[in-house]
Length: 450
Image 1 (cartoon, helix red, strand yellow):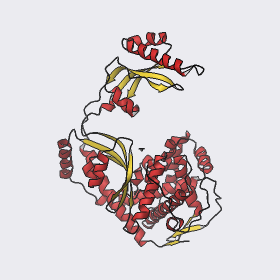
Image 2 (cartoon, helix red, strand yellow):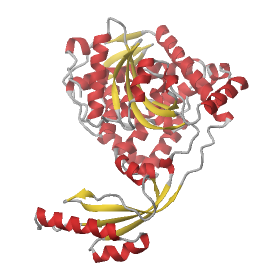
Image 3 (cartoon, helix red, strand yellow):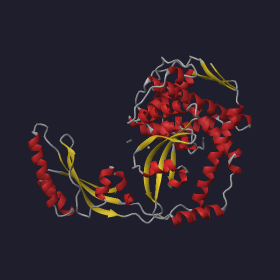
């Protein structure tokens, strides 16, 4: 199972359509045990080993409900599996602390739903679990059961997460959403602003926000630096945002969606994001109230067709090298290949000319520009039909070119509809009120740590 596939499990709220609260170094410093291990959690546990389901040692009691070390171990295993890599001990301690906070919030949400007679039916949980299994394990819930157990988690841990997200969704539908109103005038004003900004750039950003006070700023910045280091080493941005971010976008993996930079409402974040390129990670950036980590997923022009949405017909022409030949021979073969490609008279001549060069040809008729590696995107967009990219590749993998045989340009974007914009505004307001709602649940809770 790939990290991308398992991210569906970790981002279950988004995958299942539930409402609840994707890198370019800095010196890192491990969290001192006395500072990072505030709850007295054992530091000698390995989260990659199978846990004993019979071990019931409490780490927190939330309004009488016990959260055990086993609960934490099994939820941490989901994060570790999504990253497909081991975490350093100091990082693991910090991850466990965040997972414990998540479990406390989840418990408060489930308890609040039960108190208001909106308890989640176990049948609905099983149906959601089965749907996730169908998407990832070909209609085999038992296979997903075995996989979860093999990574040190359990079906019960994932079903508990599903229960929490369903409960929170119900609470928001009853107690928050009905009291959020967006007028037609507000939507029309937004449409006018979009039209006025036609052609300007908008950005699709991912964010991880960590709140801080003057007293905790140094520790929070250190934590943020460690998150950045883990992400640069290949960690899943979606998984880390879901587990660590305190912004309302945590439930969707930190995805802010398409925005104009003014919507960030922070001059420093605007300046940082404006200089970013797609795929770049920046942070932590100090802002009022805490620190932000930004990841630029993509950018485009407002209400304009994106050239990278063009559909291409390409011929991939490639030569491979005998491992026994010398570097000089390979270079000579590459030079002859390059000259031969340059002499080709368009796509109609490619197959015959390639055969004479000892090259293979693969035709691809439905390739979107944005699906290509970014360096190739800019080159392809400058080509005319019948022209080829410069050669690229290596001795081990072979040398190839892409020849452009056709291009269907995208239609001019019409922009979001009235209803889409209304829903966007409503979602933003629901998210803000949801954060206040959850904060109230925390303030009223009786929580004991052991």
